[in-house]
Length: 315
Image 1 (cartoon, helix red, strand yellow):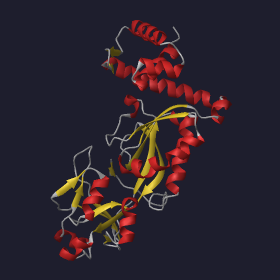
Image 2 (cartoon, helix red, strand yellow; image 1 turned 180 degrees about the horizontal axis):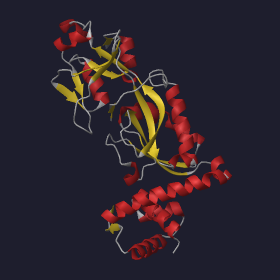
Image 3 (cartoon, helix red, strand yellow; image 1 turned 60 degrees about the vertical axis):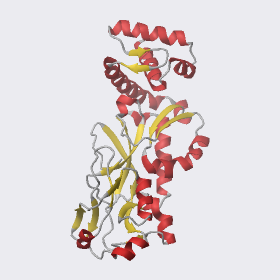
């Protein structure tokens, strides 16, 4: 048994979540994949996959083995990449990407056709869930993350800087007035944006003259969705601190009004994260470069390499 080929077959089945789909992408009969997995399980002395007529799931041993396979295959790709000129010239194959949240829906998806037309041999599988995936366990090649990176097992490449704005609808300001200083915020109410991962509301962070200041804002209305958060602000239900790219048009039209101009919110890095060794893949290299160019073209998201970022982040 070719163990490396067996690992590749196993990983493709897990990524496709189907023997049939994996067989189609590998150009092999389904029976050949079944035989390979049976031989692999017999060699390892454990069951890797639980199979029924409708579902396919990893066993606990299968999950652990999948992680090792991903690391080994990534290392093989990294070792071979400099010598595979044809692959470097034509990026191809399956690329699993976690975009998540509003930035995926509002920034990346509307322009994704450009990437697909430029690299037609790259097969993209996109996950827009706000749940933070375990990239190695879930077989994800890369993911967008906003804020300081927490997982030291992943490599991060900053591709942008997310800028924020404190604002409110005119109806709220007419009823409650506009805060003139950070101290005034105690007399106001905010709509809260909480982390779907931790369940805790995000602090309001400001770049003040004496350094960054974080304020725990009072509020009785909260959501974990960035787009819903901005929409609630438009209804005059409280102050919001939101990503500028989401409300740029509303600020221009006057539907939202910026407050606290002299103490802007602290920006956050936007990073593309991936497991160790994965950037050697030509398909990921071109996708990362395309994302960088996409973010650099957005004034509210382009990189600011002079900014020192702090811990904290958004889903």
